Image (cartoon, rainbow, N blue to C red):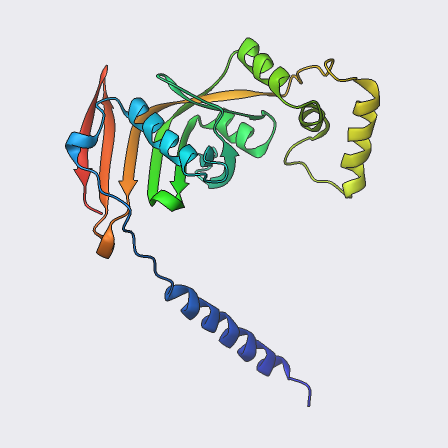
Length: 231
């Protein structure tokens, strides 16, 4: 006998509850390391570079992948994965379409947050700061370093806008491929980099029994204050 509407709702609710209970039982034991105050570099950028280097050496896939969180003018938050493309004393940089949702939100509210998670090392780094566009020269230098087809992809995509079909995007891509040979793809006016200048960074090291190590750097004028946080 076919399920009634009520039975279907009840069955769906039971399946969702069962899945939730399974997820709630997931556990990991963190045994890889520990950090103490004396281990932390006084400069958080140097500390970050050291951890990023460890992640690269650990063969983590895309160790420069990071979550970028933004907030629009109405206070609504959004997050997505992007790739870190530079880290200097004055900030963390990435590239995107300025007209995308993230670009529009950074234009409305430049305050943003980053999260790096390296599961093999049981490490996480959080960054909070203010985003500003990179210079046109810096954006063009990076754009020219990208593979030819990636350059075309950036030019072809009106990021975050609605597409009726996949074919629209592919047709645009092929048109641009015919128009611009390799080495002659122009930097789009709507594409470039951002740099997030950090005001706070947090380094998290997973430990057993959820007794994790956490250290927060907070900018104070030209120096950084380091504090241990409860896990």
